[in-house]
Length: 195
Figure 1 (cartoon, helix red, strand yellow):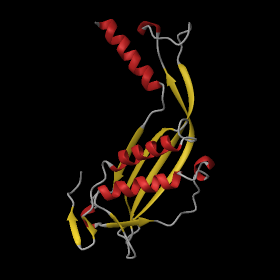
Figure 2 (tube, rainbow, N blue to C red; figure 1 turned 60 degrees about the vertical axis):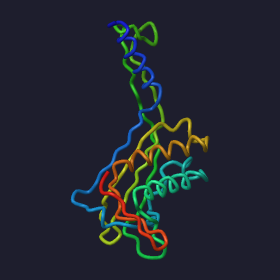
Figure 3 (tube, rainbow, N blue to C red; figure 1 turned 90 degrees about the vertical axis):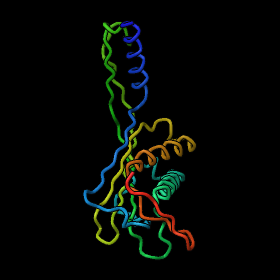
Figure 4 (spheres, helix red, strand yellow; figure 1 turned 30 degrees about the vertical axis):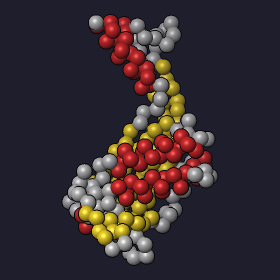
């Protein structure tokens, strides 16, 4: 039984080590009542360029990010401001950086990469997507979400890129509090509080 659990643990570690770590998180400004917000719009582009030319020159990247964010915010009860002043401004930053992962295995577990049974060091590229939501009236950051994942298999594959961006944005927005209501035509649909 112990030997089976050891092999299972080694197999899970090997599987997890085979791809770049996926992570997502968020920050909510303390004391902010999201029930006061109903609408959003995209903030003007800032002076920071997209940090990787493979993203900046990709014709799909911006569309995928904006589409995923718009769907996610709509699901949270926020509507895009038509011509009126929005309650919130949305901005994102994206970068790709070199990362290093160390996969330690030892002889006692029976899981070695070679005869020396040393740690395996891998280099990979990780993409980071940061989503900032700012109170349009005060200019105060009220929510920030971030997600990181390996990008080797998505930079040249639009379908995988769309799926990874959708997954990242959904993971970020999962903890974002909901808005007050969505107005469609003349009917208002009430939304719940924080998720």
